[in-house]
Image (cartoon, rainbow, N blue to C red; front, side, top):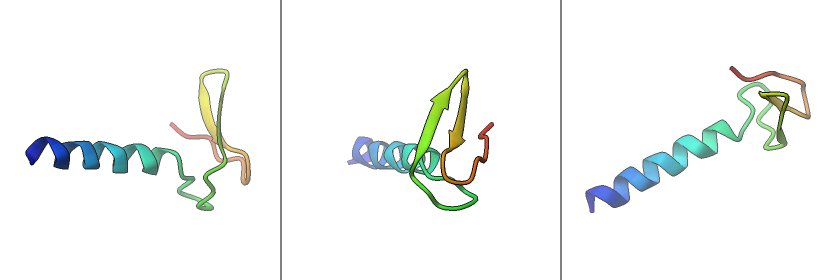
Length: 45
């Protein structure tokens, strides 16, 4: 059961990386080594 919890935590973390913290959009692109939101233009670290 512990491995299932870790998998869910990993999925949750990945999901958060695919949502813009600024506008909430899931339209995230990766280009030239940077991830950015196509909706508002925020560049992720």
